[in-house]
Image (tube, rainbow, N blue to C red; front, top):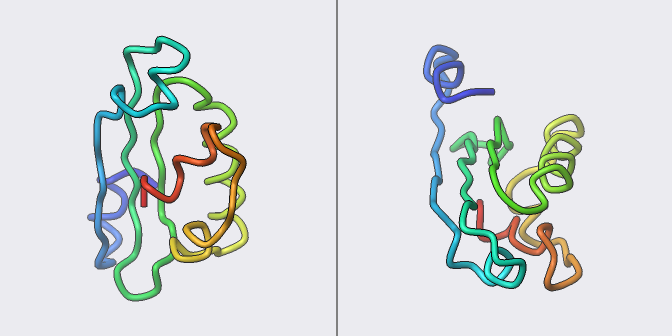
Amino acid sequence: MSEEQARSSGLKYRIKSERASDWYTARRVAETVYGFKTIVEEESGRILGAHIVGPHADEVINLFGLAIRHDLTADDLKQTIFAYPTGASDIGYML
């Protein structure tokens, strides 16, 4: 779901958006472009949308897609232990 779709849905939501090119995940592969935006429903914690650009975006967006499809919450993903340092290990900080 995009921010515009979330806004028009009438749901209460929170957005977290950040340029993350100074995170270790990007620095270790000398990537200067890394950022994200996540959209989470306030009441349920359900992940409504995720947008990612940068290293490992293809893998990380698949994990967000899986979470959205199976109604996992932001807390569910935050409690998941991912190997470090990987793109997936950044997910908890994106929420």
